[in-house]
Image 1 (cartoon, helix red, strand yellow):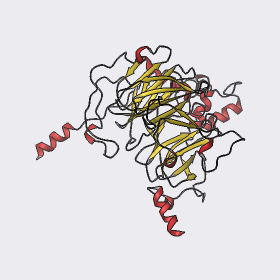
Image 2 (cartoon, rainbow, N blue to C red; image 1 turned 120 degrees about the vertical axis):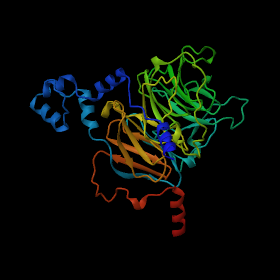
Image 3 (tube, one colour; image 1 turned 90 degrees about the vertical axis):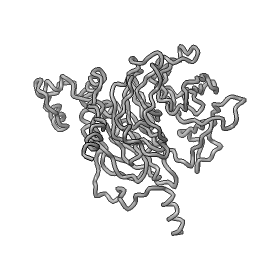
Image 4 (cartoon, helix red, strand yellow; image 1 turned 135 degrees about the horizontal axis):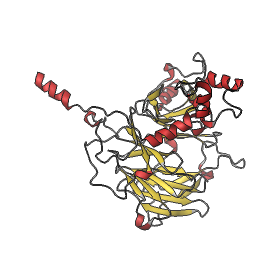
Length: 427
């Protein structure tokens, strides 16, 4: 027995230490740490942390120079105060919350719930800023339907898993169960691009930057691909990135046409540089384990498996990706210099990772069920999380923990239907 135990311990995989590419680490630090001018003014080259109070007092005394704070100084000061207070209730529905997103200027928060969504080849657009139209209880006649299927397809020929606007708002890109990527031109009112992109469902797709020329996609075939719309001969991607061991659930671009992150059913987030992509797949995709994330637990023996041709720059571990396509994002440029990656999780937390160190710097805990999505305000220190418990919850960098409006343990639930049933009995 003693020998068997020793062999079992020796067979346990050892977690690899976190590593990150030097260039992206340097670029992240430049955006999120005090500038050399500020460091020199305060500490004459000595490596020490600077408090927010120190920055402010230095500006008042003139030590930071006549120019005041740099953008990196501002991001450094703001990221010292992460939105961990609360949460407060934004909305409480009788169905699972799937999506929560701030608009790019932070003036709107849009949420999607299970009762409002369905799998079909149609995307519905609502003009939320038109004073001439009103929507009560989401009346469907004011919704413009964009049809992505061909004329000879059935009404429900495929389902759309991912939708993203271009930066100029003139195009929409989708990924679907037909293993394809489609781009819809809103000005021409038609599908302008159809790409048979992957060997399985395309769960994630996004525009790489403001130009709209580059697309990133992720699929259940375990691959991330880069597409250049200026040269789509024979539906061949500009490049392929390998490293994940299971289906990709979401992709977020850093916005520079170079770096992006992907969330995956292998329970990791990976950071990528498109300059490291290959022209084609090297060898067969490895399959280390057989499981289904929709109803099974992740195999313990697969926790530290590694792809033999991993092209990623860094890997972030700790959160859980089970049952649904959980999303991840870079934190905002304005308030954090994109220093963090944050994600929902099936273990009911919002995780915040440090891009440079790989550390989990915060775990936001209150929800009673899977957190599928979360969104960080582009300018304010606010995070909103959306969960299958039916709640949209708001987290702030400051606030009174004794505030009676803060959500309590007594208001927690594992399902919105349980709350609905209780209300029905009371009535």
